[in-house]
Structures are given as structure tokens and as C-alpha cells.
Amino acid sequence: MSILVAALATGNQHPYLGAFILIGLGSLLFLGGFQSYRKYRVLADTPRAHVRSMPMGLVHLRGKATGEPLISPLTGTRCFAYVCNIQSYVKTRSGGKTKWEWQTVSGDDDIKPFYLDDGTGRVRVIPIQPEVANLDLARTFHCEIGKDGRFRSVQPTPGFTAPTEQAVWDYIHGAHSRKLLERVFEMQGERGKKMKAVMETTMKVLGGAQKAASLVPMLEISWSSNAGNLRVIEQCFLAESDCVVVGTCAENPDARSEEDRTLICQGENEKTFIISTRTEVQLGRSMRLQSLVMFLLAVALIVGGFALALHGGGLL
Image 1 (cartoon, rainbow, N blue to C red):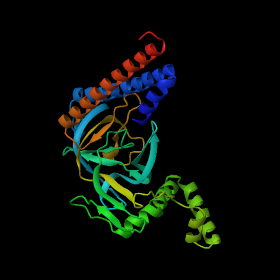
Image 2: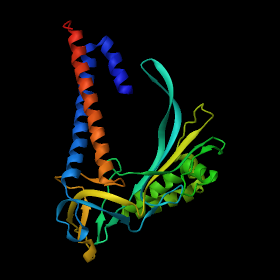
Image 3: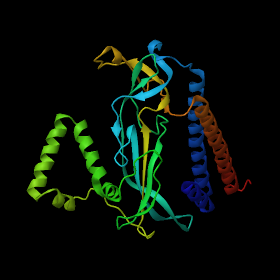
Image 4: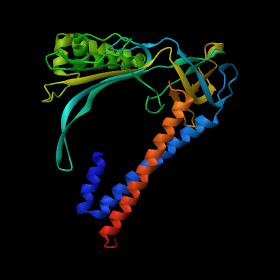
């Protein structure tokens, strides 16, 4: 929306530049709508298979997400993916107007492979970023907290254990950053172990973790004038969820058992990859609606861009 307002403001002084921006935005929206509709067609045209008899290549499965899960940082929920966002109420300017809005200033996320069990067998699923895989995340916690460390409002989701004020406060001030750093070291293997050892030695030389943290802050939060509040939101892809998976069945080069001979991932040629806790009907309806809205907005922006260009040239 801010980009659109800026494009219209630019069009008043530089009509051809404004027209170019509008047409460019419209083209991007059209491509996005086409991709969403294509995913819908792939979902609709790919028959549901069973793990026991699934073919190689593009497959459509439904089952339960099982395996050794992650533990979410705030509510301790068993999950295979989580996203935690820390948001601040900040002042923004667009089109000469000032407004306040929530913006994400920090956070943490993690995602882990899981097994899809449909009763006939189970297969390993290698997920990618939630937004790329259409991964549905359930909100498990939401709160606003002040700079005094006290909750201003708390909206725990029924069935999940809400964290304490101290736990949220610690998370805001760096606990999540340290967890992220530990994960980076782990991914680096032997090199990561050496990096971690060097960091720990450096911290000892400087006189402890507290002094090191004061020299290199893990997180800088800009408190706003909205009573100094921050908003913290946790969302998870829950373990044991019933889900739809559409992806590419491929051979597992690192198979260690008969069960791991194949895996589901994003293919090199067929990029469609969907993991959703919604039914096929709900998912298809959402994709069709999304593509329709994007197509309509794209047409409106492209027509507006051409109209602006014609007006600038004195032809309209």
C-alpha cells in the first residue's frame, strides 16, 4: 500500500515514472496470481496417493505429521516449525501523512523435517520456508508487554501453556538470538564447534557473558511512545497435525533404513510444494480467491499506469 501511494504521488510530478511503477507493480501481481492459480491446478489435478504405493515425481498425500518435534521457545509447544515475531509500534510517513503501525523488529524461527503417516506407511518430508511451502501456522500466544516487563494484554490460545512475564522479557532481550546462534554453530559442524569455542574463550577473557553482551548487544529494541509497548506473537505448525502435502517424491541419497528410501521435497523442475493443515476443498478455495484478487488488482494497476502515461502525454 505504501508503494502504491508513493507511485501515485510520483505520478503527479513525473507521470511517465509513475506510470512505469504502476505497470511494474501490476505485472508482479499478475505473475503472483498466475503462480497461485497454477498451484491450485496442480493440487486439483494430482490424485491423492498412499505412501505405500506412491510413485516417484509429483505426489499428493494426506496424513499426520509425526516424528521428533521441535519445542517452541515461548509456549513449549511440540511442533515442526515455529515463527516468533517481536513487533514495535512505530511512526511512519507515506504520502505526506504520518501514522502509527506495528512493525516486526526482531524474532526467531525454525523448521524441521517430519514424517507424514497416512496409515499405509510413512515418508520423510523436507519442508522449506513457511511462506514458500504454503505452511499453515497456528497462533499459540500473543501479548503486549511494556518496558517495565509487565503484560499490558495477554491472549493465550486455549490448550497451550502461556509463558510468564519473565520468560517473554528474557526472550525479547536476547534469549532467542542466543538460540539462533547455537543453531548456526550446529549447522556449521566441526567448523561451528571451533567458532563456538573461540567465542566462549573470548567471553571468558572479557570477564563473562554479561560483559560481552554489553559490548556486542544481541538485540536492539526501539521502544515507541505507545506506552513503551512491544507485541510478541508465536505461531507453530503443530506436531500430530493432519495435513495435506503436495511435493516431489525423490530418492533419499542418505537413506539409513528401508523407511527412508524416499522423501518428499521441492522438486528441481516442478517447484510446487504445499504443506497445509486445511482440507483440499478449503485450500483450493483460498488459492482461487487469492489468484482472482491478484488478477483484478493487476489489471487495475496496469490500466491505471497506461492512463497516467496517456494523460502525461496529453492524449487523455
